[in-house]
Image (tube, rainbow, N blue to C red; front, side, top):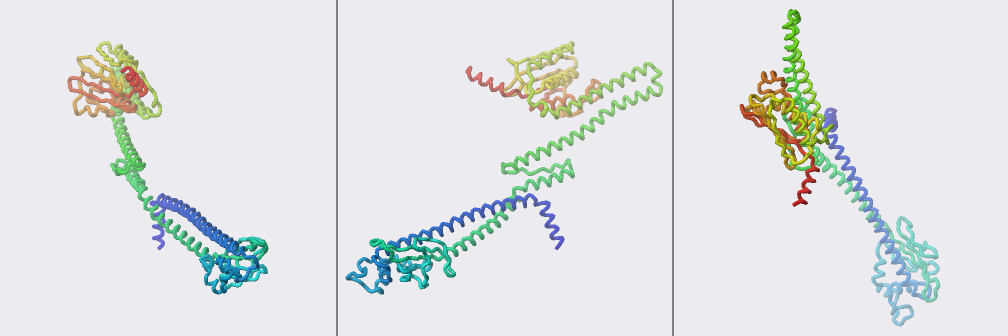
Length: 511
């Protein structure tokens, strides 16, 4: 038994915490809503019922008094029966006067209404002596010399008591009293049944809400439970390909599922990149460290006494240190690119100014090369990219084109625009890249020809930095190449939207 309760406690404490909370809160809300509704309904209905009975009792009392006021003398059993019946032809002293028994038999429907079991009507003469009653209770007159209606208890019965003196319409003298008592036992019975019904409805509604709330909360929280399971799997195996199933419903959980899966994909990609990055860096640093270590050991043994060996070793070590410094700088550049979205989100650059300046700098740096620029921009355009990053991007691609050019030292550069993007194309006529390598040239530390690339001072990070730069600002970069013919890089960067809208308006006005 203890183990059963322990399992139940663990089950509710782990898997169903949110579900139970949701269910209880929903049920509590529905319970309160039902209770308020039931209370208002009960109170309104019972008050209306009591008020209606009170109004009916008052109207009946007034009707009886109005009929009895027609008498000129003190009320008696005979005159009371005649006046309540409303038979003017058989009034006392008339030729067609009938016996009291005959008149009582001919009591009209009004008198019949007075015979309902909850109502007791009593009439008294001016001496407050009982002369007429609808029920054999023999109650004394309990009123005063003025009209009154109050809730009272007579014997074991509780109800409304209406008392009223009767004055003759002709003589204006007191001729008797009327007393009506309406027993509220039937009303109390109705109120009790109504209250019981309300309680049953509240209990039933709460039970139904608990059941439906648990079912609905379990259904709606199913993606969260699945997400928890997948997170536990990812904790055990970060490289697992398990993902949340796509939901058909287009709601917040569907968006959450999409974002969650995208987060897992990016996280897995970052993990893979980190592992690859560590492996590549360790591999890239191993070679220059080994070279420097070899030269230092050589110098330590005997090379320091040979000026020629000493100079060669120092020069080689310095070259490797410079390459390591370049490698570290490029690694820092890659790490800083992750902050572009936060630091340079709203920065812009002038397309014509930056491209022309960079182009002119390369003409000065490499006078033995022929540089050709085709500028198809009829006016200055603004590009969504930080100026330093824009310059760095162009320098990487142009420097790459210079490094891998052979006999034909010629670089073509073109600048144009579409409706939303700036397109920059940089073409060289060098070695070219085959189809197997073209898809991997943007990978970190990848070199088509590792020996020749190292000889030219490359670390295999330039194109990776260029791709990260372009994609960080919402653009993309493509490469097309053929062996022995050359390579062309196409860069697409988004332009400022406001400028495009203004130009569209101007063109519409001109047309």
